[in-house]
Amino acid sequence: MRTLVKLLHLPDEAPEGKANYNPDDPYFQQWCQALFNSLDEGGQWAVPRDGLIFTKHGDEFVLTDWMPWMPEMEGVISKAELERQQQSGFEAIREHFEAAGIKVRKQLPSEVDPA
Image 1 (cartoon, rainbow, N blue to C red):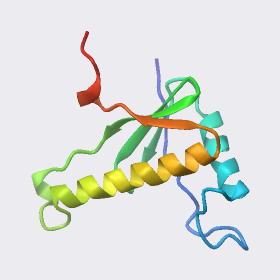
Image 2: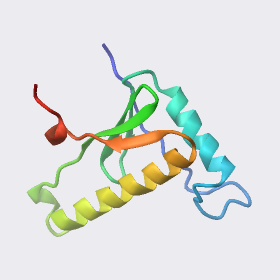
Image 3: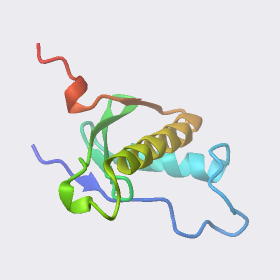
């Protein structure tokens, strides 16, 4: 089975009249719905800015993995800073997708029951 990882992000510049990324804005709700609907079951969306990977499971978007901190990152970002950035990114994405009617949850590999 092949999985296509989508590397899509919100536009760097919002359309005219869209000055912020308000989750209640219909433009961003439609964007979230379009992204989610473009994925097949098991399809993934990667967020390079935060190193997050979401997987479509039924009618949910699940955070299934995130980039670990590595010693080579020392001096650029600390482990604590990366964890805060990733948590903040997850919360913002959850807020936007849930405003669009798509449930978002976290199930990282360390949280999966091995049974």
